[in-house]
Amino acid sequence: MEHSLRSARVATFVYFILCGTLMGAWVVHIPAIEERVGVSHATLGGLLVLLGLGAFIGMQVAGRLTDRLGARVVVPASGVLCGATLVLPGLSRDAWTLTGALLVFGFCNGCLDVSMNAHAVHVEKAYGRPVMSAFHATFSVGGVIAALVGAAAASAGLSPAAGMGAMGALGIVTALAASRALLPSAPPSADSGSAEGERAPATERGGTPGRIWVLAALALMIMLCEGAANDWSALHMKDVLGTPASTAAFAYGTFAATMTIGRLLADRLAARFGPVAVLRHGSAVAAVGIALVTIAPWAWAAFLGWALFGLGLSGCVPQLFSAAGHADPAAAGANVSRVAGLGYVGMLAGPAVIGWLTHLVALNHTFVLLILLCAVAAAAAGILRTGSDRTREPAPSSL
Image (cartoon, rainbow, N blue to C red; front, side, top):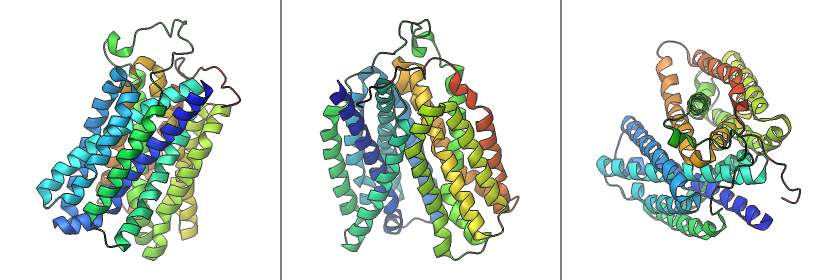
């Protein structure tokens, strides 16, 4: 049992890295594909929204399928489809074919995203201690892998179709190879004999519990903050503080680095202090960080602010996903899909919302919205304490 559980955890790491790598493979080829297809930046921005739409739909479909068929079926199938469709944007010849390619690839990526998170919830429940944040950290590792491989492919003169096709093929092999180690089904709830555990799944009771929608709203807020940092951190350094473009690029790098480090540490913090503390104090640290960015007159102060922002946000989303999955093991996939889906909407909306606000106020003043969102998340962190989904037996020391 211990060996199979450890293998399932390793396999989950593999799928998170795979998802990050496949999405990163598309991202690193965006400039070349944009030039090949001949679309403007504005048109590309609209197409990226369609990628997000496809992912959102895929998340909702995969959530229900994972609950019905099991993660052991849906996760590898989604991984294979995601790898197979990665090449489609590279083969696109015009805006219309790119539109279809992004919708299909986004759908498959959304399926993989939710199904692997649902399986991660089952692994965490079997371990009896927090392990979710580390999975999310390895998603970032996949992005690094994609950047390195993409750079090597470009240096070798490979076309986007060839480079993405090769990475997609490797992704298919990886998805199939890791599938046997996945858990065959959701582990039984530790509190299955309690009144809480005896309740029928939310889907059978008719409707989604209000708590899940609160978690989804918090995910939207936190991921909106992440999306804003992804697209506006470097521009803030360049346009507001006047740093060279080469220096400004380190703003996002600082944010991403502390985000990854924080997620590697968040599981231990959640095990010791609880998920409420991770969300509450993490959101508070993020609020302090982005407030520092807002008022910083010097580049070094802004870098410190972006570092604190990434560190504070790092453990928040994994706690929300975990709480959604544990709230009702029989509907873990559906609940995670709702939280992840709204969170993804926030990730996409963040850059657009900040861009719209720049028509009204200076860029650094738009970050006041992010301060407020982090403050709301900190105040609402007690929602993670509701229910028995975080009550688990201690994990065996050998695991």
